[in-house]
Amino acid sequence: MDTPPTRPHPAGSELTTSVTPRAIAWVDGRIVPAHDAMVPLMDDGFLRGDAVFEAVMVRTGRTHALDPHLARLRSSAQALDMRVPVLRQVITDLLAAWGANDGTLKLIVTRDGTVRGMVTSGSWPETLALEMIDTPWRSALSGVKTLSYALNQWAIRAAQARGGDDALIVDDGQVLELPTGSICLVHDGVISTPDPTRLPILASVTVEALRSVVEVVPAMPTVQQAWEADELFVVSATRPVLPVHRLRSDGDEQDLTAPGPVTKDAAARFEAHIATSLDQLP
Image (cartoon, rainbow, N blue to C red):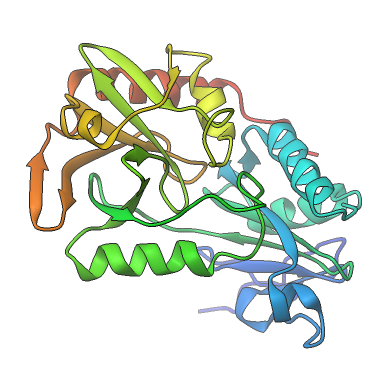
């Protein structure tokens, strides 16, 4: 078999064509395999997590809701008194090298000015079991998407150690969010989600996009209301409308229909919306 030709690319890509796309990264104007990408050791983004980032859905080589994600990145940077440079070339180079494939685009900017981009492919189970993890969640940077995700990762590990797939963060009887996503609850056909204007959680770009096709009511859901929900589903840039089949907490558990009728309808509507509202290639 002939060796595939090197993919021509304005950023000087070192990649070759492949049937299954592998994770790639943008490093100082070059596209390289993600496992070869590096950051300066003394960069505070690496040493202290003093950085901001965004994750954006990619479908058939095109992003979805890129502008709102970039706006949230700038808002996070402003909260940290940082500056975000123009990232258009980073995005252009990565998408050109990625080709017409699905994936997730991640953009990272550190306080020291290091910029890195990455596109990866991934998969999720068809449904999730969520374990409630009760932990203090409010901080001075609540709602800011920083690279400091040690607590988020701890929560995921704690949930998995107890038999869940992912964590549902609760604090003082209040349902908040997942470590890397938002939760939606369904009661009597009504979809609600924790309100980021009143709770210490990240404002979800994907929830806002979902609101363009179904009504999602901002709420202050309690743990009891989560147990009483007819349906639950997770929303994030990488997991649009992912049903929850089980809710667990300290050995107690509640099975749910996954997907239930409301979740199934929301997922179908949102998939149709995504297909018709992908961003134009930069």
